[in-house]
Image 1 (cartoon, rainbow, N blue to C red):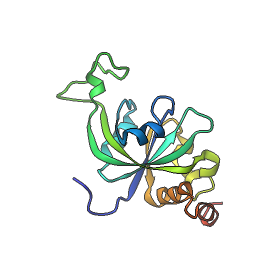
Image 2 (tube, rainbow, N blue to C red):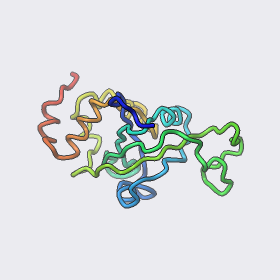
Image 3 (cartoon, one colour):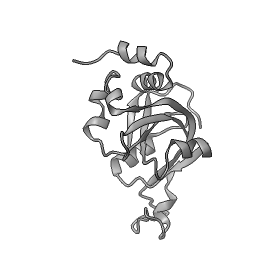
Length: 171
């Protein structure tokens, strides 16, 4: 069921553009976000709600960058890849009665005018203190909506340069 109040948290999900990137999400319009095999990231997937905004981050490329925006279309459900022996994400300890892993559905919202690499993100308020820079390997992480909105403004090119300059920065 969709939220009635505005979300307090958005999310950042990482993908490798060579396996599934913003081009694929834009073409397909939606995807199942599966294969996450870290318990903390799994718990974040479980916390996602329909309608939550999601920053799409290309990792394992040069430079790693936030490239667009998605939306949670379906909240957490058992990741079917954990039950598929032919899947790279198969978990022999997972059962249908007690699944270990979670997936969500994410829809395409927009591609940013320009990718936002890490050095640009650092110019936006509070990104320097974000888990992206302290625990960079986590594939799913929360992003406060105010920070997400500032990032979208910069990425969309809508007052982007102004938003980055006016953004309060911690010294």
